[in-house]
Length: 620
Image (cartoon, rainbow, N blue to C red; front, side):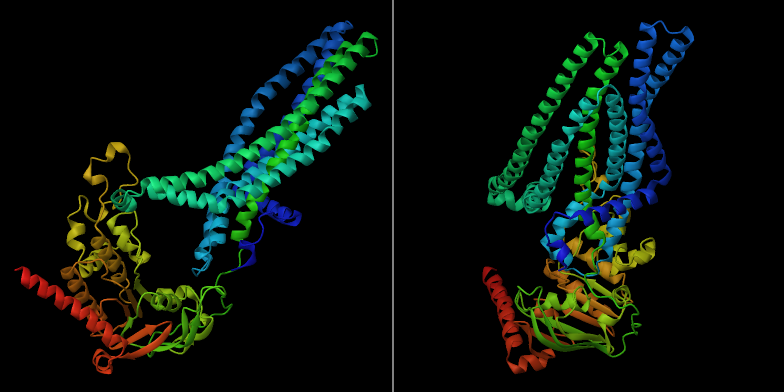
């Protein structure tokens, strides 16, 4: 696992600069015109309050000193225009910000999942640290626009602050410095708070993931039966609330810290403003300031403090968004989980077979070896059965053949070509499979089959033919909308629940047949992997499925895994795994004659069937 997924959450300044540049690039690519318009609008919005304050001062001084009517009128018109701009530009900025958010978020989401799609194996997805990073990256996908917005907010704050500070300095340089001095501790404390909040979000990742797991269980259709039968709803709810209390407790402590710090800073600003007001009143009473000067001072002091506060909030918010976006950048910029050759070797059409030579594998250095020196051959055009107790390494071996992982030692070759030397997508395009943990997609029946070969998803005759071979066509055809029926109830509102045409839930056996139909849609592939293809089916359905599989396997290269050894007895070769090694191999007759592990397992299963038949006969 690469270090970036397990390293500390806090990025350094170089990291923040790098992700800031990435955010700017995404904004330019996703919404260049909108970003430019937003920048221009920001400049105007920053100038309006300062311009308004100065026009107000000039107007008051003209009126109190008897200025010319034309001059008074011109300044008044200028004030009216400034007021119109002050009213209009917040709405314009809000519109541009919304457009920027939407367009950049769309591009950022696309870039994120393109990066996730490039992870060819399973190692990242089976690592909790990566899953935490990915969850935060999903949240951070909205950050680029917010980083740009924050940058413009900082720019607007700086310009407004400089304008009012300059105005204040004209009246009193000392007061301008005093007001500015309050910004330094405020800025430092706000950035520290931002870093603490980002660290808290990272630290709470595992806790929030556990809370999400328990919450999903309590609302899951799949878990509902056991939860109610075993009466474990209260237990699971208690665990969910424990995790949630920990999350809320950490956030409450953070909120309390922010309240104390920000309350103290606000009090400091109020004291500075109060002292300034007293000073201005005394100076005006002594004749050192004009009425217009006092008006400008009364506007400038709170405006400087407000601009500083807004600037500090923008800086802290931008810093936090950059920290969140760093998770996005880590995922998008992660190294491939499997090494890829710059010039891959062409994968030949399978003619001889697939060979595993002294294959060793474990999921990490901290885990025990799952496969320990496995050597076996899958001849072209033959069916190889894989047998072993749970944990023997059967599913792991399948993952290696599909190149979801690479062996730690040894090699797997396809007609003599190492799988590590070929293009992964080309390899997988040659393989069809039914996995033991097959997916049931909340899509239509047609889509559930068509996902097995995306090029055929709109080829209805091909989908029907695959469903017929899997024995699921009658069940699909009987649905309210046939192949276009949604096999889910999760996308419909309460008003639709009584309408059977809005969605249908299949049984476990029907879902398994759909998974088999997906595999049959890829029937022209070089290798078919069937991992427990009949688990969960009744006896008649299992017999029908294996009959269809025998017809399908004839003359094809197949790797068949099953705990029901009767379904493997006609395999050309049976390989028995035990404790990560090949314990024995041969055809059914040879292995039975050898009296080894396979014969023992087969006899145990056969005895179980005989006892069941005897019990049924006695009952009759």
